[in-house]
Image 1 (cartoon, rainbow, N blue to C red):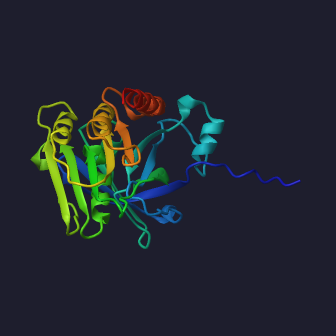
Image 2: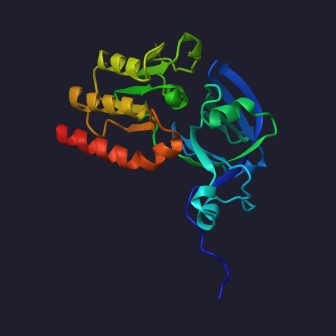
Image 3: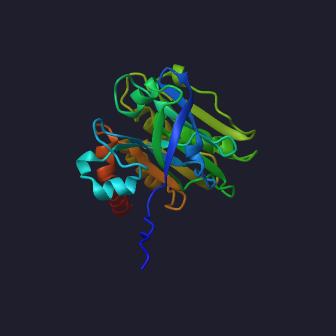
Length: 283
């Protein structure tokens, strides 16, 4: 009888080491990871690849080699490390360099302060990658909508558009100082930076999208950001613009006002199912 344990299904664990850090804007920090712990990391063509960064709880000893499935099977939930989901801004398999951009608002949150304090040599476990969206070349045009949390994925999608592709992108940020120079292919790409100022997150995004004149043809939609904003814009696109579910290629709340990622992820599936059911029945 073999004593080999059956393989566990779950996200692959990687150990990443900080090799470089820079501040792109006052509230966006770029961290580049490397190291042999990324030898098995691989992406598969999506522009919304994401990883879950693992933050161990202080004073909790975790088994080595670290395995999140083993931790969750053997340890009480209260001892599980906290995770935060981030888009892969860039991955270079030859140099094993993984780039992640962090929104940073002072001491608020978990990952932002970690990125602000990170130094070359610091290590972090990450899980993944996941992903499922890439701009479809057969689409007449592309609609990309989001706030700072969705900016890295929107930037990758724009960079991957073929020459001549048409796209309309709305990105809500705090102010002009948060704008970034993005790689945009030659073609008909309209990138609109929306400055929030003192308004509530998402208000500028909703106003801009609902008031915009869309190009002719069939779009493919990427819509991510604050959950209430995504809810409002999903309803607008489905019922006011008449887009089909198939055209809404990637739509989800990355975060929700009033809760951290732990609280949001625990109820995210139920929230999305309820919103979709409400909006389908209203149509």
